[in-house]
Structures are given as structure tokens and as C-alpha cells.
Length: 373
Image (spheres, rainbow, N blue to C red):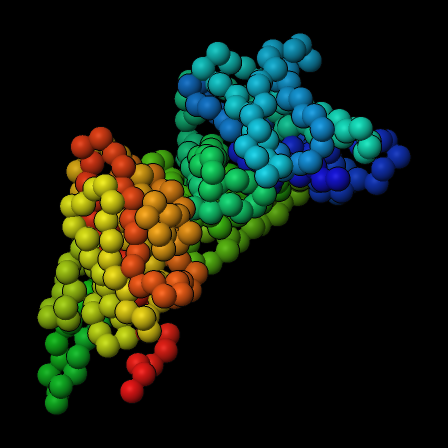
């Protein structure tokens, strides 16, 4: 039997074990860590009034019960458990009715296996947090023992940190022809250094896990990273974390005549063929070359408030790309693991749904085998 509380959840949980069990990273509350060579610091995770914190447990236990307790141990609420299927269970904590300090306790019971208990780190709810940065993160596919595919969730962390030390990012492509250099393309972007105050080790691990997700927002602006964070210990049970973040949406783009569309489209060559749909809704199709495979699908919300998009090798299918919700006007790129045409079929079927919504779709295909003579 299995009972897994994902490390990617917003709240950090540790297993409550017998006093005779040896302590590990995963069965000790942060503020109860043994630190004979330094100071042990207590810490409360931060959330704001009005947020909803979603938590998933991947388990085949018979029963899961979640209870929210106030700081003094008084029972506050018992959230409902939703069965998502495939052994994924979820409960939501509505922060709109909370103010102060709390913790959550999970109890898993089973007819065969022993009862398990997990408890969250203490968390505090207030209307706002000064000198904190809000990190939201989600994934396009199921990962980290969270079912992101069938029930997309946005995890939330409030971190005492700052975005500082700007550096430019981007690429420059030039062509040197007999002593004359011509700029073909330059992309201007923004790098910012993300630096935390001293935080618990588990929170540094949560930030690292968050940054590994497909989509990460810092104060509602999407950033990405290309290297793991640096973590610096100090003379306590807390650490500081530093990582260089790159803003996803570029500041600007200069292009010459490379066949680039100036807005994120792909260059068409003998080995790369983008298949474009502009301002579409409902059922749509594109045809892929039999010797090419799909490597990415780029979607832009052209009009409307939001749209859902999926893609498959049959009408209404989602075996190429599961259902995605597009709510921002910037492009969303979904990388596809090597998807050659299905046997006897070179048609990709898109299903787009949204009230008054249209989208631009660019399906990027690359050659994976040579043409047959």
C-alpha cells in the first residue's frame, strides 16, 4: 500500500512517527529539528486571505481524513475529500475565513496496513505580506505525484525575498559576408536575481521543486530558469537561496529576413515545418508530413477571455496534447515528446472551446526520417 503526500504541494507535510523512530528530513517538523551546533528557528508558511490552497495525496488507502486546526489545537474545519481517480485524492483549504496561525493533519486508514498520520508545518494567514514574493507554479502533465492532467492546480508559495540585480538576456545572430557584418536577429530579454531571506531547508527545497515545473510566476509574471538554485547554509536550521530567473516574455525582437514572423513563429526549412492556424475555434485540422514528427505546439489566445485546447490523432482526441486552458495573451509553448504520425494517419485534430474565444496555433514539426526515393 502507498501513501504519498507530494513535495510539490503548497503546504509542507511531515510524517508523525513513534518516538523510537530515527529522525529524518521527512518525519520532523522544521522547528523541532536537532541542531546541536546552532540555533533552531521556528517558521510559519505564509498565505493570504482569499486564496485557496489545493493539496493532493497519492494513495490506495481506504480512507483519508484532513482536519485544519488552530494554533492551540482547536479543530477549525474538516475539508471534503475529492477522489480524482487513479489513487489521487484532493482537498482544498479556503483561506477567506481564516486569519492567524493553523496547521493541517492528515490521517490515512486501511483495513490491512497501519494507520498513517501526516502533519503540515504551521502556516499563517493575513491580508497581505510585506517584503514577500508570491510564487505560483503548475505543470502541463501529471508529475511530482500530483495529477496536473485531469485536475490542474496552481500551487502557491509566499517567500521573504526580492528580485534584484538586473542583467540583460537574449541572443544575437549575425552574418559575416566578406568583411561586412549584418545583424540578422537580436532578442532582448531580462534576467533578475531571486534572493531569499533565511528560510527553512524544506522551503528551499519547495522553491527548487517549483522552479522545475512547466509554468512559474513571480508576482504574476512568468519566469524560467536554466540552472539549479544555490543554497547557502548559516549557523541555524535555515538557509538562503539564490537563483537567476529569466522573464519568459521578451522585451523586444529585431529581425532581418530569416523568414521569422516577429512574434514567436518558427522558421520553415527542409527539416522544420511549422503548421499554422490563425484565429480559429471549434474543430480544426492540420496535416503533418509522413516523415516529420511533432516537437512543440505553440498556442496564443487571439480573442476572448479564455479557451481550452486539445489535440489528437482522431476527432475530439487528446492523445497528442491533453486539454489545456489558455487564459493569457502571451504564447504558451507545449513541448511534445517525439510524436510521429499515427499509423495510416497524418491529420492532427484540434478541439478549441471558449465563449467568443479564438486562438492562434503553431504546430512545429521536424524531420525524423528521410524521404523515400
